[in-house]
Length: 84
Image (tube, rainbow, N blue to C red):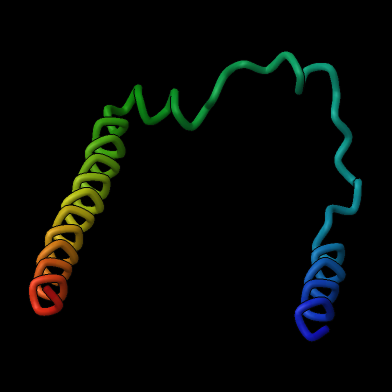
């Protein structure tokens, strides 16, 4: 029951943060295919910095996962060797 109440209050609070509807969507919004931020970053050469940072973060996450997997495998071997 407590989870139901918390979930209900969460959804109730989300409606408070909904948009007012003060923005109107025009036909130009649907036909817009340019992304100004990406074009600006690309023209300034900063897109490579963004890609580099994303790659460093991704490499860090992969490295962390590999290290954790090795530790877990080592612990599993220790636990199963003690039992058997």
